[in-house]
Image 1 (cartoon, one colour):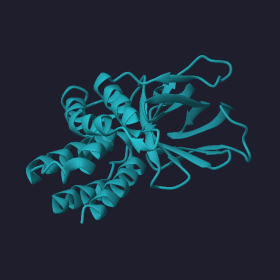
Image 2: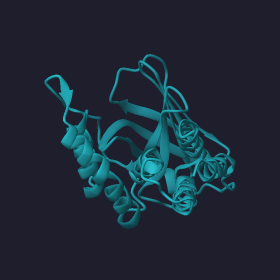
Image 3: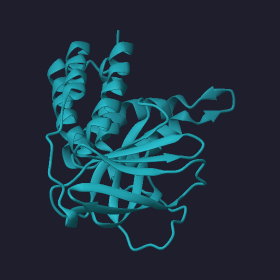
Length: 243
Protein backbone atom coordinates (compact mmCIF):
# COMPACT_ATOMS: atom_id res chain seq x y z
CA UNK A 1 0.00 0.00 0.00
CA UNK A 2 2.76 2.44 0.90
CA UNK A 3 4.57 1.80 -2.41
CA UNK A 4 1.41 2.64 -4.34
CA UNK A 5 0.95 5.84 -2.33
CA UNK A 6 4.58 6.80 -2.96
CA UNK A 7 4.03 6.36 -6.67
CA UNK A 8 1.05 8.67 -6.77
CA UNK A 9 2.88 11.27 -4.64
CA UNK A 10 5.73 11.25 -7.15
CA UNK A 11 3.27 11.63 -10.01
CA UNK A 12 1.78 14.71 -8.36
CA UNK A 13 5.22 16.29 -7.88
CA UNK A 14 6.23 15.65 -11.50
CA UNK A 15 3.04 16.97 -13.10
CA UNK A 16 3.46 20.07 -15.28
CA UNK A 17 1.04 22.50 -16.86
CA UNK A 18 1.39 23.45 -20.53
CA UNK A 19 1.86 27.15 -21.39
CA UNK A 20 -1.22 29.06 -22.48
CA UNK A 21 -2.01 32.30 -24.25
CA UNK A 22 -4.07 34.55 -21.99
CA UNK A 23 -7.00 36.28 -23.65
CA UNK A 24 -7.84 39.70 -22.22
CA UNK A 25 -11.56 39.04 -21.91
CA UNK A 26 -10.83 35.92 -19.88
CA UNK A 27 -9.52 37.75 -16.83
CA UNK A 28 -10.20 41.50 -17.01
CA UNK A 29 -12.39 42.73 -14.16
CA UNK A 30 -12.98 42.38 -10.43
CA UNK A 31 -12.60 38.95 -8.82
CA UNK A 32 -13.25 37.60 -5.32
CA UNK A 33 -10.68 35.24 -3.81
CA UNK A 34 -12.18 32.45 -1.69
CA UNK A 35 -10.49 29.50 -0.03
CA UNK A 36 -11.66 26.31 1.62
CA UNK A 37 -10.88 25.74 5.29
CA UNK A 38 -12.19 22.32 6.28
CA UNK A 39 -15.80 22.57 5.14
CA UNK A 40 -16.00 26.37 5.41
CA UNK A 41 -15.66 28.77 2.48
CA UNK A 42 -13.84 31.96 3.50
CA UNK A 43 -13.61 35.13 1.39
CA UNK A 44 -10.10 36.56 1.54
CA UNK A 45 -9.67 39.39 -0.98
CA UNK A 46 -11.06 41.41 -3.88
CA UNK A 47 -8.66 41.66 -6.79
CA UNK A 48 -8.88 43.74 -9.96
CA UNK A 49 -7.14 42.08 -12.91
CA UNK A 50 -6.04 43.79 -16.11
CA UNK A 51 -4.40 42.22 -19.16
CA UNK A 52 -2.34 43.97 -21.81
CA UNK A 53 -0.10 42.48 -24.48
CA UNK A 54 -0.82 38.98 -23.15
CA UNK A 55 0.42 39.95 -19.68
CA UNK A 56 -1.79 40.07 -16.61
CA UNK A 57 -1.32 42.59 -13.82
CA UNK A 58 -3.63 43.66 -11.05
CA UNK A 59 -4.32 45.27 -7.71
CA UNK A 60 -5.66 43.95 -4.43
CA UNK A 61 -8.66 46.20 -3.80
CA UNK A 62 -9.73 44.87 -0.40
CA UNK A 63 -8.85 42.11 2.06
CA UNK A 64 -10.50 40.39 5.00
CA UNK A 65 -7.49 41.29 7.13
CA UNK A 66 -5.22 44.24 7.86
CA UNK A 67 -2.28 44.04 5.49
CA UNK A 68 1.19 44.30 7.04
CA UNK A 69 2.95 45.00 3.74
CA UNK A 70 2.04 45.71 0.13
CA UNK A 71 0.07 42.89 -1.53
CA UNK A 72 1.09 42.00 -5.07
CA UNK A 73 -0.51 40.51 -8.19
CA UNK A 74 1.57 39.23 -11.10
CA UNK A 75 1.76 36.74 -13.93
CA UNK A 76 4.59 34.21 -13.92
CA UNK A 77 4.56 32.15 -17.11
CA UNK A 78 1.02 30.82 -17.42
CA UNK A 79 0.31 31.28 -13.72
CA UNK A 80 -1.52 34.04 -11.88
CA UNK A 81 0.07 34.69 -8.49
CA UNK A 82 -1.39 36.82 -5.70
CA UNK A 83 0.85 37.44 -2.70
CA UNK A 84 -0.85 38.57 0.51
CA UNK A 85 0.73 39.39 3.86
CA UNK A 86 -1.12 39.52 7.17
CA UNK A 87 0.24 37.84 10.28
CA UNK A 88 1.69 35.29 7.85
CA UNK A 89 2.22 35.09 4.10
CA UNK A 90 -0.57 33.77 1.89
CA UNK A 91 0.11 32.91 -1.73
CA UNK A 92 -2.67 32.22 -4.22
CA UNK A 93 -1.78 30.56 -7.51
CA UNK A 94 -3.92 29.52 -10.48
CA UNK A 95 -3.36 28.56 -14.09
CA UNK A 96 -4.62 31.44 -16.22
CA UNK A 97 -7.61 30.43 -18.37
CA UNK A 98 -7.54 30.30 -22.17
CA UNK A 99 -11.04 31.74 -22.38
CA UNK A 100 -13.64 33.49 -20.26
CA UNK A 101 -14.59 31.58 -17.12
CA UNK A 102 -16.83 32.04 -14.09
CA UNK A 103 -14.45 30.24 -11.75
CA UNK A 104 -10.67 30.21 -11.77
CA UNK A 105 -9.49 27.24 -9.72
CA UNK A 106 -6.24 27.49 -7.78
CA UNK A 107 -4.79 27.08 -4.32
CA UNK A 108 -3.78 29.12 -1.30
CA UNK A 109 -0.51 28.34 0.45
CA UNK A 110 -0.65 29.64 4.01
CA UNK A 111 2.80 30.07 5.49
CA UNK A 112 4.42 26.93 4.13
CA UNK A 113 4.01 24.28 1.43
CA UNK A 114 2.51 21.73 3.80
CA UNK A 115 -0.50 24.00 4.33
CA UNK A 116 -1.92 24.36 0.81
CA UNK A 117 -5.69 24.37 0.37
CA UNK A 118 -8.08 24.64 -2.59
CA UNK A 119 -9.02 28.21 -3.50
CA UNK A 120 -10.68 29.99 -6.40
CA UNK A 121 -11.49 33.33 -7.99
CA UNK A 122 -15.02 34.27 -9.05
CA UNK A 123 -16.22 37.46 -10.78
CA UNK A 124 -17.54 40.00 -8.29
CA UNK A 125 -19.26 43.39 -8.19
CA UNK A 126 -18.70 43.95 -4.45
CA UNK A 127 -17.41 47.35 -3.34
CA UNK A 128 -15.89 46.02 -0.14
CA UNK A 129 -15.18 42.68 1.46
CA UNK A 130 -16.95 41.48 4.58
CA UNK A 131 -15.79 38.65 6.82
CA UNK A 132 -18.12 36.26 5.05
CA UNK A 133 -17.95 32.56 5.95
CA UNK A 134 -20.20 29.92 4.45
CA UNK A 135 -20.60 26.20 4.95
CA UNK A 136 -19.35 24.32 1.91
CA UNK A 137 -22.16 22.00 0.89
CA UNK A 138 -21.10 18.39 0.37
CA UNK A 139 -23.42 16.17 2.44
CA UNK A 140 -21.20 13.07 2.93
CA UNK A 141 -18.19 15.18 3.92
CA UNK A 142 -20.30 17.26 6.30
CA UNK A 143 -21.55 14.04 7.90
CA UNK A 144 -18.00 12.70 8.19
CA UNK A 145 -16.77 15.90 9.83
CA UNK A 146 -19.68 15.84 12.28
CA UNK A 147 -18.81 12.25 13.29
CA UNK A 148 -15.14 13.14 13.76
CA UNK A 149 -16.01 16.19 15.85
CA UNK A 150 -18.30 14.12 18.06
CA UNK A 151 -15.58 11.49 18.48
CA UNK A 152 -13.01 14.12 19.47
CA UNK A 153 -15.14 15.49 22.32
CA UNK A 154 -14.03 14.29 25.72
CA UNK A 155 -16.38 12.91 28.32
CA UNK A 156 -15.30 13.65 31.89
CA UNK A 157 -12.06 11.73 32.28
CA UNK A 158 -12.24 9.69 29.04
CA UNK A 159 -13.01 9.61 25.34
CA UNK A 160 -16.47 8.64 24.08
CA UNK A 161 -15.52 5.12 22.95
CA UNK A 162 -18.81 4.55 21.13
CA UNK A 163 -18.49 7.78 19.14
CA UNK A 164 -14.89 6.93 18.24
CA UNK A 165 -15.90 3.46 17.03
CA UNK A 166 -18.75 4.87 14.92
CA UNK A 167 -16.44 7.45 13.34
CA UNK A 168 -13.83 4.80 12.48
CA UNK A 169 -16.49 2.63 10.85
CA UNK A 170 -18.51 5.27 9.02
CA UNK A 171 -16.02 7.90 7.81
CA UNK A 172 -14.29 5.66 5.21
CA UNK A 173 -17.71 4.90 3.71
CA UNK A 174 -18.56 8.61 3.60
CA UNK A 175 -15.18 9.47 2.06
CA UNK A 176 -15.77 6.89 -0.68
CA UNK A 177 -19.18 8.47 -1.27
CA UNK A 178 -17.45 11.82 -1.82
CA UNK A 179 -15.12 10.23 -4.40
CA UNK A 180 -18.04 8.53 -6.18
CA UNK A 181 -20.66 11.27 -6.16
CA UNK A 182 -18.65 14.51 -5.77
CA UNK A 183 -15.35 13.96 -7.67
CA UNK A 184 -15.22 17.58 -8.87
CA UNK A 185 -15.75 19.05 -5.40
CA UNK A 186 -12.62 20.48 -3.73
CA UNK A 187 -13.31 18.42 -0.58
CA UNK A 188 -12.42 15.32 -2.61
CA UNK A 189 -8.79 15.85 -1.58
CA UNK A 190 -9.73 15.85 2.09
CA UNK A 191 -11.61 12.60 1.47
CA UNK A 192 -8.57 11.01 -0.22
CA UNK A 193 -6.31 12.03 2.67
CA UNK A 194 -8.84 10.57 5.13
CA UNK A 195 -8.95 7.29 3.22
CA UNK A 196 -5.16 7.10 3.08
CA UNK A 197 -4.88 7.62 6.83
CA UNK A 198 -7.26 4.76 7.53
CA UNK A 199 -6.08 2.43 4.72
CA UNK A 200 -3.66 0.36 6.79
CA UNK A 201 -6.09 -0.07 9.67
CA UNK A 202 -8.85 -1.17 7.26
CA UNK A 203 -6.63 -3.52 5.21
CA UNK A 204 -7.35 -1.67 1.97
CA UNK A 205 -6.05 -3.37 -1.18
CA UNK A 206 -3.16 -1.74 -3.02
CA UNK A 207 -5.30 -1.53 -6.18
CA UNK A 208 -7.79 0.71 -4.43
CA UNK A 209 -5.05 2.94 -3.02
CA UNK A 210 -3.58 3.21 -6.53
CA UNK A 211 -7.00 4.26 -7.85
CA UNK A 212 -7.17 7.05 -5.24
CA UNK A 213 -3.73 8.18 -6.37
CA UNK A 214 -4.72 8.34 -10.04
CA UNK A 215 -7.85 10.29 -9.18
CA UNK A 216 -5.92 12.74 -6.99
CA UNK A 217 -3.24 13.29 -9.65
CA UNK A 218 -5.86 14.00 -12.32
CA UNK A 219 -7.95 16.35 -10.21
CA UNK A 220 -5.02 18.22 -8.62
CA UNK A 221 -3.89 19.48 -12.05
CA UNK A 222 -6.98 21.71 -12.24
CA UNK A 223 -5.76 23.55 -9.13
CA UNK A 224 -2.27 24.32 -10.47
CA UNK A 225 1.29 23.20 -9.67
CA UNK A 226 1.37 24.84 -6.23
CA UNK A 227 -1.52 22.64 -5.12
CA UNK A 228 -0.09 19.56 -6.83
CA UNK A 229 3.14 20.01 -4.89
CA UNK A 230 1.46 20.83 -1.57
CA UNK A 231 -0.89 17.87 -1.80
CA UNK A 232 1.97 15.54 -2.75
CA UNK A 233 3.95 16.68 0.30
CA UNK A 234 0.93 16.07 2.54
CA UNK A 235 0.35 12.63 1.00
CA UNK A 236 4.04 11.83 1.33
CA UNK A 237 3.94 12.55 5.05
CA UNK A 238 1.12 10.02 5.41
CA UNK A 239 3.08 7.50 3.35
CA UNK A 240 6.06 7.92 5.67
CA UNK A 241 3.91 7.39 8.74
CA UNK A 242 2.44 4.15 7.37
CA UNK A 243 5.77 2.39 7.89
